[in-house]
Image 1: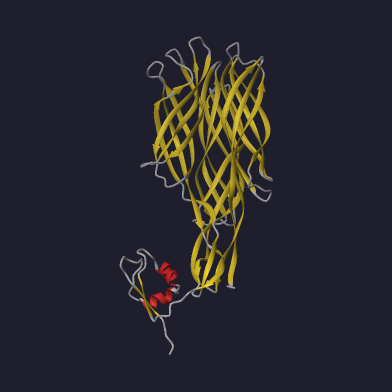
Image 2: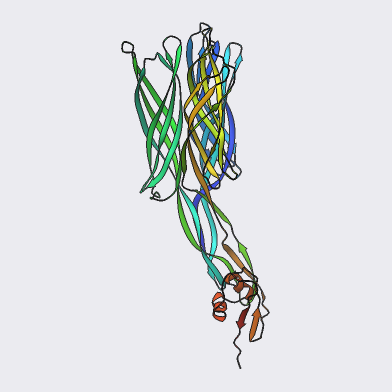
Length: 491
């Protein structure tokens, strides 16, 4: 029976995930004659891992801007809480579930005197838990030992406040607000995971009696999350969301000015990746017996250094309904972007920037038109990446009748995904004794490309013995080389 020594690796990391969709509906009264814009902002409240599924709850804030039968622009707002679950076979209560929610689509329908807004919510779920495996460190064998690199994750979370104050021309009322987050810099300092970036605050307001205007502000933020594992140089990732926002507008009609104050509560969930090494046996053989080796496999994930860039895009926009020169463009609101990384000779980020264009027609009525601007941006990225795109500074104008030229600024963050896979030796079973040669000298012709370990394993001799018998041999083996093996003979 071969004696071996082993150890157990205990780490932490992503152990699985799931994706789910759920629809949340909200009912409004039928006072809206013409719908101009609809928005559904979603906030995660709780997330809990169970047996085979993840339970999560959240709140959707539905906002509706419409024109009444008297052609007055009005607003309505309602909040709806929801609960949902997603199936995940590998899930258990010991895991931690992190859920990223986003609004994928908002649809509007009329039923009698009521208007229903339905938000289709997408949930991207990651499960984290302890990752353990056993590996050999030594034994009564000729062993190949290597230092194997692994990632272990350290989760952390925190809350921070951000605020902004700015002055505009006089406005009568804030009709709609939407927020997008750009986490442009995530790094570690001693004892803290730091997330820096900006919140793109979009405001749609009523100016005068029946005129619309949109404002946009980039509100900088910095979130410091305590984390014992955070050290300078370690890679990390984080998700920052706007949990609450409070808006105050103080208008001075005599001066024709308005001061707007925005107070934001931000929530951040971070993960710091620590690179560790284990000294493990990755292969072994016996000089006296055949052996059967059993290998394990462990895979862990991490992230690389983020790639950040800013691109200005422009072009002809696709419209949900036609326009002509009699239409007056008043506001562009609800800016957002979606994109995917496309591989090829030159990696590209391909997607679409979207917004709602509000126009005033010749008859004095408003219309809301969905605008989309496709884009393709060359990027420098290796391997798979998590993609984050923030659209801001979007504008539209009609140079030729019926055609809309649009521009937007894209703030892009690509976070490379890293994976480490190790295959340590787990156990060894002793087999039949080897049939050994009794000659004093043997000449062996190895395979071209073999290294010292492969050669030693073929000869059932330790690497030290092979090197001592053939001090001039170079590795990897070249075609036609010969290896000499000497055996001591006793008289």
